[in-house]
Length: 197
Image 1 (cartoon, rainbow, N blue to C red):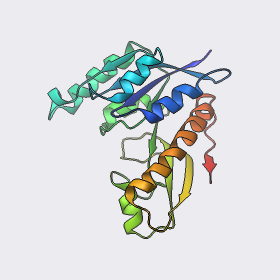
Image 2: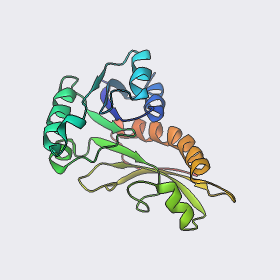
Image 3: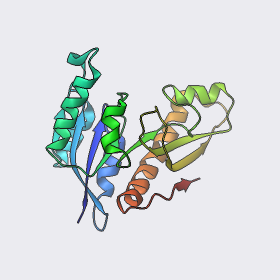
Image 4: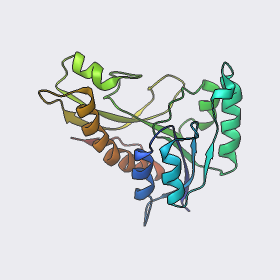
């Protein structure tokens, strides 16, 4: 029986599309819902165009009440009974009380070679540090920001003259390969890391 995958996003949904388009044929999982905290997120329209149920849990009315927002998010997820949650550009930090029930069943993609550059502005920080390579990481989600066991990494060289934007574009292309590869393995119960050059 296929594992049911919920995808959470806040933006255009390019990683969501890569994940959804990979979940066909003999893949051990299928998408069951795409949720966003942003009503205008482009990813919602892309999910709807692919026949996937969508929903919005707007965080803005919950300013200063993260638990209230997360309770509503849990309710929205529960309707679809997912086995796995994939964070795909979901720009909210989740609390331990939200993460705990999903421990070992929630994964995230982050645009750096963790443990380097947790948080934001990862590409600019890699350039400022003079790194020779950058990349992305898929990891299990824990209560600590951009932490948790690493399930996969993909690397790209930093090229002379790179800007944060040009580096981000090359890393994003790798994200679209890495995240589906990790999800296929993860959904089958295999946590052996996927490492791409």
